Length: 300
Image (cartoon, rainbow, N blue to C red; front, side):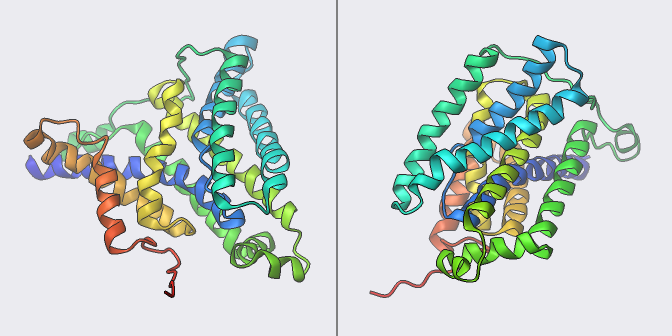
């Protein structure tokens, strides 16, 4: 019984970790291409989920139509962000770009609520949140069908994006841009076009994350905090690594669930919300660049 419960908690944590990895991937893609830490990624997740459910509730649009319409809106939002916010500040200091994304966060959050309202809404994407009876009957392990399906969707998307950026011409251009902007320009890589593609992809990633988290927890302002949960994932995996986002997500997802169950009762509970940040802080002291990040040697 104890072993089956351990595996139930562990598997649940790993499934949540795959969803964390998807959110972290949006950060990684933009950071690799432009060196910008996009603090607005959480707001983009919220905007995507609220737009989709708003189209369904206000205009009676079917889900299968609302999703591509929302995807188009997210791609436009990503392209507009790159064109209006990033491009004019491209030569500025990193802290200036970071502050710009903070301002963008509040703008996107406000715009979403201005258009669609601020009330909590239910989003049904056709996946039932019920236990998988085969695992429950044969192994006494309660794993949600929704969690497995959502993790599967995230895994396929993360794998597809990883292959796209590692095997395709655009992916090679992205790696060149990430290594050296000036050298990429010198060999004829269209820098601004690559940035536009990456921001559009980040908008698409935000849409998938928004649909899955919105269907699980309801479409509400709290979705913006999903981005904060991705921060420990990035610290563990490295800000420039797609595989790091995946591994970091699995570590954070599993560790927070196990800590809540086995350590939480010793400290009064509520450990799940802050344990990932403690783990990330301890990891920073040992390997600041992350598991797969590029090590920077500073000369004094």
